[in-house]
Picture 1 (cartoon, rainbow, N blue to C red):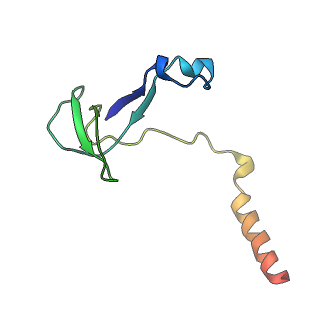
Picture 2: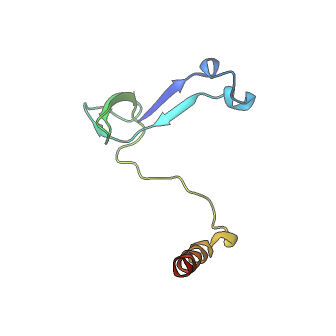
Picture 3: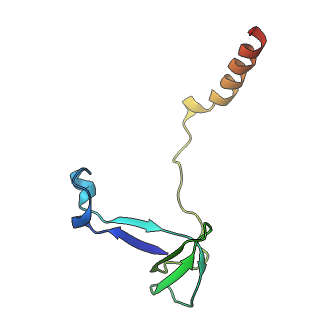
Length: 92
């Protein structure tokens, strides 16, 4: 479900100019409380139990976001941190 929270003219004056020109939008997943087709208004119940209303964009949508490509410089951080933590325990 998609909803526009704030239209461009309603955005805070503190946001950057390019951000202020776009609406503040949200997409919410949940369970339909009524029947509707894609593109129609619908009320849904969210996993947190809230009831929200917006435009149905898809039925059973998947996730399409990503955190971007892998950063080689960060790949060994977990092992390095575990080593530092082990060393800290043994010397204290």
